[in-house]
Structures are given as C-alpha cells and as structure tokens.
Length: 293
Image (cartoon, rainbow, N blue to C red; front, side, top):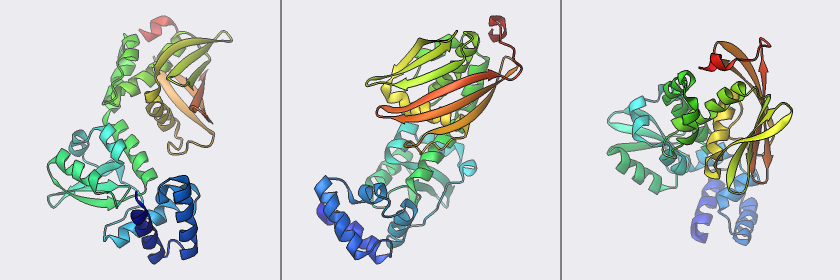
C-alpha cells in the first residue's frame, strides 16, 4: 500500500472516531519506518481493535457489517464452488444467495481484487459484507470441516487406513482431515501414549511415544502445518485464530467401539505451533490389532 493509500485509510479511521489524529501521525511514521502496511501495524500494536477498524471502513464505504458468520446457514452449493485455498488466500467466504446476488464476507472492504476474482469464479453478482478476519478464518475452517465430515467418517471405517497418510492434496481439505484422524488410529494400534506434531524448517514431523521412547513416525510438507494444527484445534474446541499463546483442550474419540480421551496442548515456537496429544483409554483397555481391522 503506497503512502497516499495509507493516509487515506488513516483519515477514514480518524473521521469515524476509531483513531485520533495524533495516533495517526505516530502510526504513519512507524509504518513508513518499518515498511509495513498501516492496517497491519495498528492491529499488531492493538491501537485499534479489528472489529472497530473493519466496521469503520465498512461504514465509510456504505457496506454492511457483521461480527460473525452464521455457519449453519451457508448453502452447500456455494461452498462447493469456492475452493478452500481460494477462500483462505483472499479471506472471503460465501454467506447466502439472495435476490440474485451472492452475499460474501470480506475481511478488507478496501480490496476490490478479491471481489473481482470471486465474481469470475462464481459467474454471479456479489454483495460484500465486511466481517473481521478472525471471524472469517474461523468460519472457513468450520464450513469446510462440515462439508468434509462424510470423508472423516469414511476414514474411520476404512480398514486400510495406512494409505490415507500419503494422499494429502493442497486443494482438498478432506485428506488433511483423514491424515489427522489416521494419527489416532495408528497411535492406538501401536499402543502409543503420546502424539507429537513438531514443525521444522522444511517439514512437519510426527513422533509417537511408545514404551517411553519417542519414535519418528510420519512426515508432511511444512506447508500443511496450519491445516493440521487447525484440524486438531477444531476437534479440541480451541481457538484456531490464537497462535501466539499456549492452549489446552480435550478430544473424545470413539475408535473400534472404545472411547479414548485425548488431552491436547499447543505451544507456539519460532518455527510454528507444536502440538502434543496424550491418549487415555477411558475404559483402561488397550485396543487389539483385530479391533482396528
């Protein structure tokens, strides 16, 4: 964003009462010094809350604003037309189809390119609705998880689950769901007590703790780390948008008729979030290989 665009954004925030003139002058100087967009700087420094910033821009542009997205009411046919990687890249998500227009949640009311690309993708007129980016990120994960729930159930019943480990496809979320789900199957089969998902410079390493020793098990490309961590967080009921603080949660899985508790911990590191999961058989009975097919 050039200097004029930065100042234009700042003046909107001042005019809408979201930022003082003095704060704007200081923020513009810092943004120029650090060579970062003004919006990014304001949010990182918590000078302006994201909801207030997005609403101020929406009001200025005469655009509707919503704090969150009603995930349950998003039509499946619209979701099917928008690949998840497109939605994540542009931070947009379809909301509804009304009056011949597709209502679309957008995180940046000042970005016309996302809407142009979406119009071309859908072949329809679109009506943008400004929504905070964190709400959009959460909705994208929940919407596409719901869409692929059938794939997850299929993975649970698949007796040849080992094949699922090597079919990750960046354009499809379902294989990531199956990949994570398979970790639980194989860890129980191998009688592991813990699952460690650890990012390195160029890959994601999965290790199982078996008989007290950490054993390398599988690897994935580093690019899959956000999807893998997000999937675990969704199952554990954690905040997928929070990546700077440790979180703890719990998953209850039913595997081969047995109920297993999984204690989940996520820890931010310099290379990304690390996930540790401890498996506890609620019935205190280890599963036999025959139970897993």
